[in-house]
Length: 113
Length: 114
Image 1 (cartoon, each protein chain N blue to C red):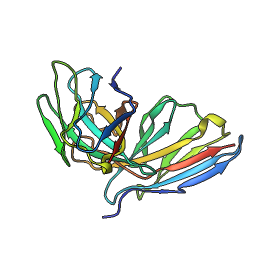
Image 2 (image 1 turned 135 degrees about the horizontal axis):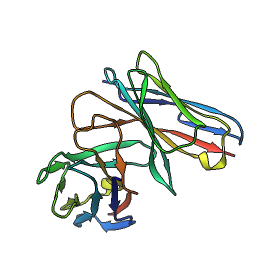
Image 3 (image 1 turned 30 degrees about the horizontal axis):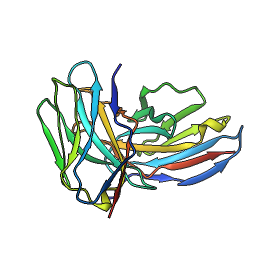
Image 4 (image 1 turned 90 degrees about the vertical axis):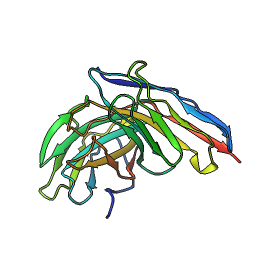
């Protein structure tokens, strides 16, 4: 079956702009989580959505937001971009069974100039 | 709060050498433990997992044993290959949690030379 698909894979923005990233989970998975990966901070949890509801949130400012649609696809949005937002944004989906095994997408590489 | 500490490396080995990457954790209760691997330009892939004390996870020649007494989950492989070159992440999730949140270590870059 198809894996987790993230689009776009690469994008370049300038400070002050906003960006929207998309994630399509594995078919049947209703949980989608987002992580930010940077060389300085490593992998940091942004938020998780389940059945269109945010049920867990990491320690990020309100400029970072997300949503989930009825087909479980998820988007995350970053407004008023800062240089420090340059990162690889990873999406992961999870099924209902199993010990919290996450399946990750290849990520969206965001560069803020 | 929950956290994971792993040796950051980089680790450089010759092909067929023995690999150990140390990982220790801090958590309330008994978390589930994972090793993920990230190849260049890709996302993370689950390598192995263990859900309770003394469990041994294994996959592709890699092994790790959940040691409650030392709060550790060290990754080992008896004979590494060039294709094992990647970044390895140790992670935990709160036991019994259904939430999709993992706490990751900082990652260990492994380079294997032929």
